[in-house]
Image (cartoon, rainbow, N blue to C red; front, side, top):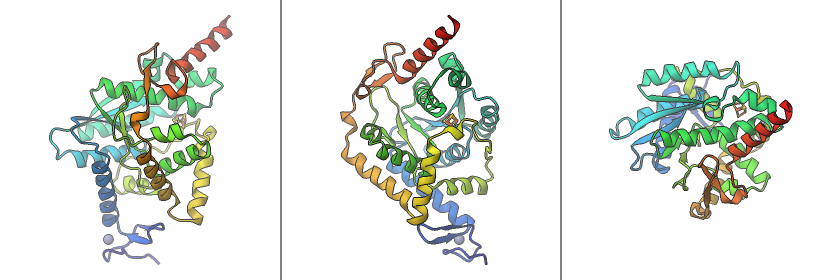
Length: 313
Ligand code: SF4
Ligand code: ZN
């Protein structure tokens, strides 16, 4: 039997197990809008900012984020959005999502900038994977972070909004806890202030579970990029996803609790204690605590070039 909405007489489209609510389409979308508005205000995304960078991959989360931010920040006349897209160079996967980005930014009238790993690093992701012993997602994450930081600065932005949902956040927090990585935990966004050279990050969808971002995108008629990255099977993250799902099964609300834990921890760790230096190769910032002089991307590129020289000698 189909249940009706707890707030009106319409048919419910979702049951939220963690809060025990049935909601219809309109009340569900209203709740999503309210949560995102609350995060936008709470994270200070539009405080004094004139240009807000939005990382848009073409996946459901980033497309939803772009649409919601457009609706939320549009009434603030001095603020404009810039969609930043990274083309990693993953054959058979990325090109179709780039089409979605183009179609959505055109429709919304949002400025769009695309940069490829090839443009910035002289090598595609597929080429890097072939030469490196590191896991594809480790390489991809290092390069994407740098690419977005450089792009946001070039676009004159001081804040970068990303489409991380509650599941992404909970998995990352769990990974940091299980590897006792307090430094990474301290650096995890959203950030209340910038650290020299690094663009402040915000995550307006962080309280929304993945099933709900999917349903929102579907109900709003937004395109959903169904293709899976060919490297995703190798991702460690999949194990943490399974762990989180069983925790949620046993104790509904586990993901929210982990997020709350991270928020409490963030208020105890001051970002002013994080110090940076400049990478001697590219001038991008380096966390001093990482014990390296070059940034992680330049270190990785140096290793890849070394591997290439060995192969060709
Ligand atoms: Fe990059 Fe891994 Fe995501 Fe593929 S699954 S886009 S390799 S981070
Ligand atoms: Zn309703």
